[in-house]
Length: 98
Image (spheres, rainbow, N blue to C red):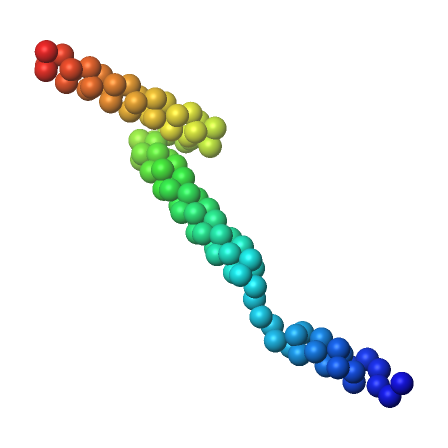
């Protein structure tokens, strides 16, 4: 025996592979998906904050002290009303076309 550990052919090869710091295709794909998910989460967060902030400012400017629970209720009612208005507009368009 004339060499052990990193002094052997396999030891030198292992050391070179360890120092290369290459990123595999799978790692690149996982990182890319992770970055998209982070961006998507930030955008969803900003949309939610913008909607609740707008509702809170509307209620606050009217002089009401609004809790988050009431704010969520207001947001849900607003969405329900918006959907109902859209449905009624479609009905009116159909009736006008007949």
